[in-house]
Image (tube, rainbow, N blue to C red):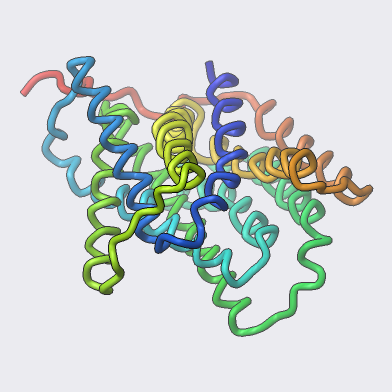
Length: 305
């Protein structure tokens, strides 16, 4: 089950960059993100209602859901979209591939989880591999104020992603499922984004071209409904640090698609980077499981009260 979820996340999130590129341009970035998560939230609420699992969050979960909506479905995406305007996508990928390290460190600081050498070593190998893969793109990138701004935004986005992972872990420890928490958190993220659009005076607009609408549907349903649900299930099953290693594999999938669609050519350095990523992946997932990723919840979602 864990292998299937991991494969699903890597394949889906490794291909969403195509749809994101199709969305950029005519519609403001915050509005495009709001459309994505607003549609995804509607789909999730519809699924919950159809299966009789639509319930209000239990007392005490509201603040965590609010925080997850802010970090995972608002700040995270705003930072990466805007960072990509100032720095090379390869540099963004390298910063984002540090997510397993941040998840391990934050899990230690806030949840008291043990930091395993395998995860840290695997993440270091993975980051080295991503650096090698994108080195040709980055070596001609000149340093400037915009470069530092882009790097800062990419790091902030990664930290926000990590915080959202830990918040989901805490919610699952209370017996809440990612399907339910994602619905509420995506609704929160959408509301905040739309409020920001209104306050900034950004005009409401929609691109009715089939390419934009198709990209929106792909990002909302496979990319968000399926991708985030599968990913956060992994967070609950194998822990935030190991689940986040999938962020190292997304660029590998993207480059393979780019080789097919955009003429990307593999080099010796790139192939060496790919081998480092694979080695890190093996190191992370061959470690023994000493304890469950989450404590056993006291009661299931919706039970009692």
